Image (cartoon, rainbow, N blue to C red; front, side, top):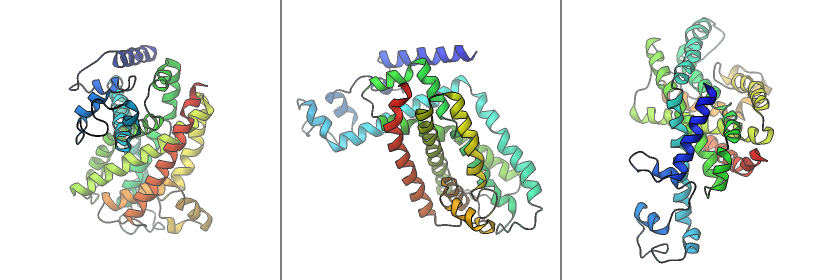
Length: 326
């Protein structure tokens, strides 16, 4: 069954890279990964650019390549193409989404209910309200920290070689895969929202706050999945990547403010928590998701720190990505 799905994904990618498909199906965009877009196509599909611009019709391709705006647009366009292609893999194993919802449900129903009776944890409100954002962050971590295993499968199927032979920026390949991990985590986010309602958590349903929650989920998943991709590029085997993931996932989780406040930690562990990216994911989610508990740092600081870490990891991942095939 697994081999059949892998063959299907490989054949599907071959067809997407070789045949011109329609924009409505979202597949014409993926064709641009293997062939450089023409100047004419870029001008027709990019708002604000005309034939009279510096990269218009009749201009040399060198001018097109040197245009900073064009480079930025192409980078993010191809990033979204990679993300869309990765997300469509969910169709081959939609049950995976359902299975991933079991673990956070068990944490909330069992761990949350037991620890809510512990009087030593001063969470600034009901403990279950404090815990829900932490369990959502845990789900994001568990989804993304093993994402590097997927690129090893893709290497074995020959998909990575096709990507590296295309003009697609390496950063787009890395960031696109990271964003796709975040989108995979969104169904769990919705499930945890529903579970929180059943448990009587004072959930913040402000639309802007919910959009902020989705943003932190996607950014957190992009951060940890990019780290996993870097590990995979260095270690190059599934067993090693799985081993590293299992070694670091629990320290990352327990050395954060996911299930208890930083204030009750020993001094040395507080230092570790403040340099742990998961702490900033949890803090941002806690500030936006529930009304009875506030974050320990400002929302702006959480966003800036998480964005900075993700950018650095994407740059490193883009440099190391070709090593996966060496």
